Length: 444
Image (cartoon, rainbow, N blue to C red; front, side, top):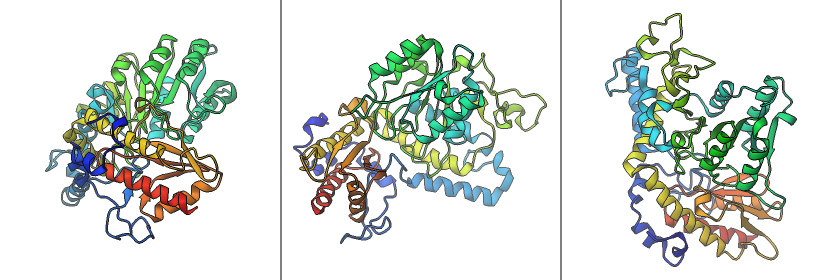
């Protein structure tokens, strides 16, 4: 396909016809106009224009089938399903069976990744394991506008160690008048404050602006300064290429209900680099991290499974794992992250180009919007964040889009996030969203 800059001269139908992933749209359930509350004169049973996969990915038909399969096993076999499973997914080791599919998505070895728990719980687990402040090295370097759950975790971890978050947490903000952090500013702080920094933890993709950080460069700088480096990959996993092992990342955590389509509140995941396998045991052990050969013998002493698998604490929900498995198998069938990222760059580039052609983009007066996501396709994922002005306009636009069957994501007080997902969104979806936005803005 063409470069993103060459796309605007072509119709969405032409672009969709050449989309190698176009058939995967049929693998997902698309909410209808009536179901999402669209009130305009639209075909009620037709799919809405869903550009909100950065908040909640759609249900795949395969995930639905696999979840129903687990319910059937539960109904017919009960506890026996832990060891004798008709579909070869014995619950006793179901979580580990997902790791070979998950590892290529994050760029890791199989035993370095595990599906378990939830994102913030895993974040605390990793910080408990790796944040070991001393009198000289005690600070946490993060971004001031990280997702609130992350900020709460950083502050509470500092407090739990008897530290004042005001001095222990270095929270970077963009320069005045800018919305994204400059890479050189992050690296400059690491160079200056490195000896006092115990932990660096950023988002791989910033949830509000959609900025994709240079994870490799930041990790390298942090390790060179002697810091532990972790990443919150909630908006990066399944979205952008990752090479956690090769980059030397110490640990990472993520959720799976956005680009990995596991369902609202779906199971989380974590990565622990195998360089820690023989240097560290889990600080907060649970029986599910016990060596599988003796797990159900329930020995007195804890012998963890090597790698990330040893950090498991409790048995995971077979329903949550089945839902995630369906999505991971679709990723594999589609060609993995190389294939989805290739389309994503074009799809998001198409959206970016059409928005910049809008008569309301950076308009001199009256209702207008600008894009606060980086314009460089390699510094963003499948998301554009639109900043509306004057204050109060965003909510009217958001409501207008929804009533017209376009589902995005609002961030108070003035941002709407639009995220075309390569597995189920089309170039026609993008065109429909921009044309609807134009109509809504004109109505104001």
